[in-house]
Image 1 (cartoon, rainbow, N blue to C red):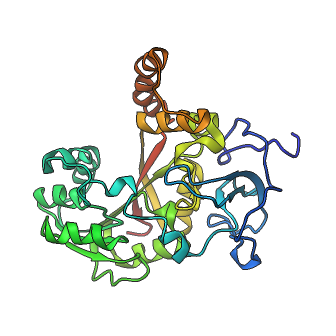
Image 2 (image 1 turned 135 degrees about the vertical axis):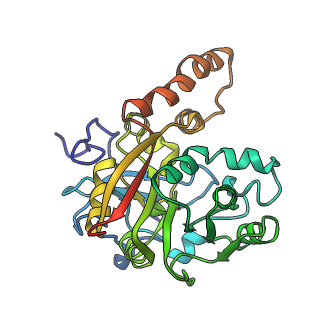
Length: 328
C-alpha cells in the first residue's frame, strides 16, 4: 500500500480513501499541544487522511483528519480548543431548528423521530431515572417521560436547553457535560450524537459509569466511519462535520472504547439516513442534490432504498450501542 493510500475504519475495515493531503496548511491550529492522542488505544502516532472544511455551516478554516495506525480510529488532530469548537454550535445549527422556531412540528412528530430508541430502551430496561447527555430540544426526554420515566437532560446550547425547560417543562441543565452537575444515579444514561464531539470520551464514559446504577443501561449513538457510505464518500461524507466531530468510530473501535471504560456491549443497532447520503453527494458535487430529473430518479431508486437496506446488512451510517457496566 502506498503512503497516500489509507484504509478507513477499524480492524474489520477496508476500502481506500482518497489521497491524504497531510501537507495542506492548517491556519491557526498548528500548536503541538493541540495534537490529539487516540482515545481508544492511547497511541500518539497518526497518519494523515484528509484536510477538510466545515461544509455544513461554512468556514475558512481547515481541519486535519488523521488515522491511528494501531487501532484504526479516526480523529481530528490538531484540533481547536473546546471553547473554539463550542462556537461552531451556533443558532444556525440545523438540529436546533425546532427549538429556535425556524421549523415547526407537533410534539408527537418530534417524539416519533426517537420511536426506535424509546422502544428499544423500554424493551431492555424497566422505567426509572434517565439522564440524556446532549438532549437537544428535549423531545426524546418527553417521549420517555410519557413512558413512565423520571427524566433529566444536559444540553450545551443554552437557548435550546431553555426551550426544553420553558416549553416542555423538563429538567434540563444548560452547559457542556463536563461543566454541569449530573445529579445522582440513573437507571439509564443516553448519549445520542455526543461521544464524537468530546475532547475526552474516556472521561465522559467514566462519569457515566459513576452515575449509572448497577444493572442500569448505557446507550451510545454515533456515526459509523466503517460504513460503505463513509468509505465511498471519504472526506466528502456529511458526517465528518469538522470541527464539531473530533472522533470517528467504527463498530469495532466503539466497542473497544466502551470495554476500556468498564462496559460490556449487549447489542448494537444500525440506522440509515437518506439525507446524509444526499448531503454527501452535494459535498462531492459542489451543488444541490437533487437538481435534475435524473437526480430525482437516483434519489428514489438508489438513495432511499439504500438507507433502508444498509442497516440490515450491518452497514448503517449510524450505530447505537446498548451496554451494561461490567460486573453488574
